[in-house]
Length: 204
Image 1 (cartoon, helix red, strand yellow):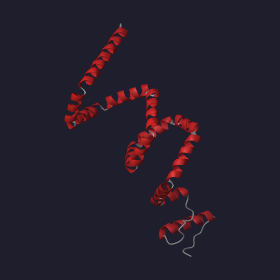
Image 2 (cartoon, rainbow, N blue to C red):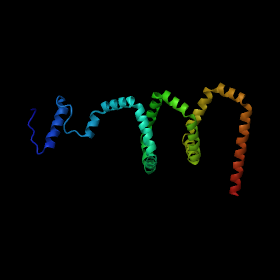
Image 3 (spheres, rainbow, N blue to C red):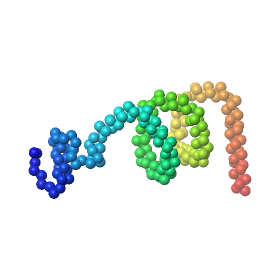
Image 4 (spheres, rainbow, N blue to C red):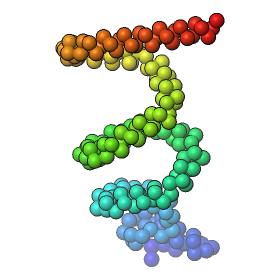
């Protein structure tokens, strides 16, 4: 017996036992009275390590399960994203740096797998990107316009640095593709001229 503890019900006694286990650490490994919510912070690193090991040992099963789940619950998932659009958007805004670091680390850790996946699904990826660009044409246009406005200075600096770092390559490319560049510039300026004429006509 460690101490006499006056209490009115069993839950209070169990709770006190849990407190003593935390203090001296030599009684039951299972701390009495501790909730699941309290267990996680006390064992965060151990749980993280176990999850990591489980994911590594059951990689293929997890992959197949996720694939099947997404297929079976396609409409529900779609509806969830529609219903929680603003919350999801806010989450990505609030955790921007964490997500960026996670994605960077993931790409580093799974470099070969990603490369192999892109090779194996080259045509599907191409078709998906094409469809996405078509379905989100106006959104992409607005996003790119806003991005260029918001990051004008950085884009200018990046472009300048690239031209400095690849000076000889750019020079060689211009020499090798002289006629194509000429034709592209001709078409570009013609399109701009037509667009300008259309705006003037609409104003009249």
